[in-house]
Amino acid sequence: MRQPGPRRASLAASLKIGARRGRRTPEEEEVHIPFAQDSLVKPWSSMQNVTDRNQEKSKTPIQRNKCLLNINVGGKLFHIACKVVARYPVTRLGKLALHTDPMKKLQLCDDYSVQKNEYFFDRDPSIFHYIFHFYRSGVLWIMDEMCPSNFVEEIEYWGIHLKYSQRCCRILFEEKQDELSEYLKIQKELEAELEPLDSAGQFEGKFLGRFRKMIWNLTENPYSSVPAKIIAVMSSLFVLISIVGMTLSTVEELKHKTGKRWMEHLEMICAIFFTSEYLMRLISSSNFKNFLRAAFNAVDLVAILPFYVQILFENLDEADTLYHEELHRVENVSKLGKVLKIIKLMRIFRILKLARHSTGLRAFGFTIRQCYQQVCCLFLFIAMGVFTFSALMHSVEHDVPGTNFTSIPYAWWWAAVSLSTVGYGDTVPDTILGRIVAFGCISFGIILNGMPISILYNKFSDYYAKLKAHENETSHSLKLSRRFRLKERALRKLSECCRADPPCHH
Image 1 (cartoon, helix red, strand yellow):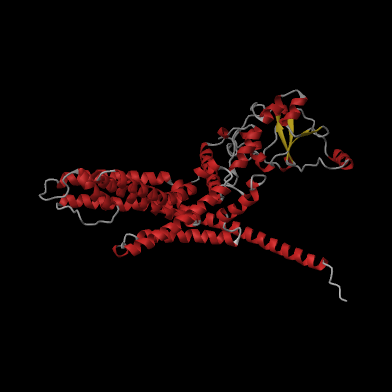
Image 2: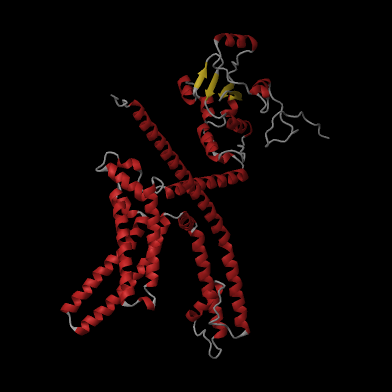
């Protein structure tokens, strides 16, 4: 029967308690220091005066053992055997133990105490506990409560690679690190979503800088003043009025001469307002190229172009009536009429201008951009379902007399409607196999439509809450600054009135 060995003092997870180990030589026993021992961790006392140092000398002997490295990390003292750290010569402490040149050793540490023979490192002592454990056991511990960025920075400083950790811990740590980097990236993009293209400080020292800054505040910063807020509200109102006017222009009762004239006047007023707003933004822009690349400015340009293109085509139409024959003129009029209809239809894009002043629309667009992979997968699954079930339906229904499933392309509409669970009922199967295929198509559509909804909704609500909080914080800070400026102006006027000389009375 095996005799139980002495219980070790180390808390290393890679070693079993009670395991027998070989007898150490007297030299190894002198070098060996257990990992978990309170006497190894001491407070940093480099700032004590000379008397305290003399008292400390009298109480505790100075560590002069050349086989030990006295490492002071952020005020906590650790003793590590040189043979232990020399097994990892690439690390910082391994180089410190192997180098014989004192100057090279000083380059590896932040400070050195000659009296105590201690190397000082101004690093985090809580993380160095895991570095210390790595040298003793060869395994790098990774705790869940650690900040991934801070931990990676520390181990890179000490020259230790993440490969020394356990595979399970390393996988979880890398996933947490990826989640953190993705969160920081989204947070940065969200902040850039609300920040305007230019800033108020970019107009200093430029031509008409004060005037352009005032226009920029009116058009791009609605919380800067009351007129800026009024312009933002008027912009949204004119967008709605323009959309309503375009809708009413298609009503038969309003197509007579009087109603058409009123619609044209309304369109002209909206176009003039949108043009003036676009020109104000163009004048106040500090970078013309960035102004043209901005998405919102492109939407503004699309909103005003149909009006001027329509005027141009109408003038070309009048020129054709003067210089062309009757038949050729009629053909040109019909072609220009189709082009004008398309141009007038482009006015519907004016509704996108509401996204400039709507946090919800910005959050929706940001959600689509961030979840484009999920959206593309959804469209891919829909396309696969349409092609698959339309082929199945055509194969079981094409022999039925009077069927609408004469070909697979004709069955695409039925498959798309069934997958969306709308079911117009304009095309239905007649056979039992066809109804089974239709049931499978509808079931697949229910499952398919239910998968990405939770992902998109959760991300949309998260992005909307963050955008709204950032917007409220910005508006609150601007309101406080305006209030402080109002108080300063009032106090300045009051002090000027008090310093003024009183009128003389005769």
